[in-house]
Image 1 (cartoon, rainbow, N blue to C red):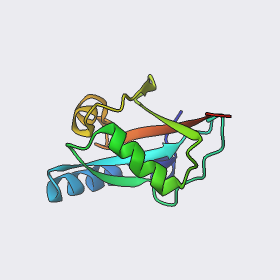
Image 2 (image 1 turned 30 degrees about the vertical axis):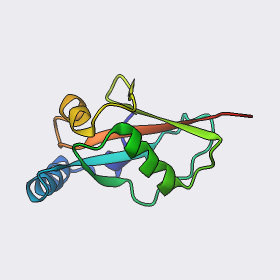
Image 3 (image 1 turned 90 degrees about the vertical axis):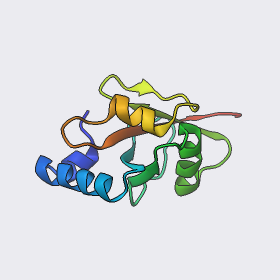
Length: 122
């Protein structure tokens, strides 16, 4: 499954230049693309902006909190994040910097994160 961001901006050179520019300007942050997966069991509203500039020392749990606020989700909706071609689920205690070093896109330098949801508590 190809990222919607990559479909919208098909020129690899442009994506690479943007991620390099951001990393040079903000060396303590990482460029992240977070996209709602179509396979989600519960509809999650699409975000207008899916690019994030995330501190390296932010935990994935804190990033999930940021996403929940941006998506304006009810407390009964659980969201799960995954990365990489193998769609590995992210644990909430991992730091975003560690996640970036392990799963960044080697071609363009962005960290692509998929968002899925599940209805909980009824």
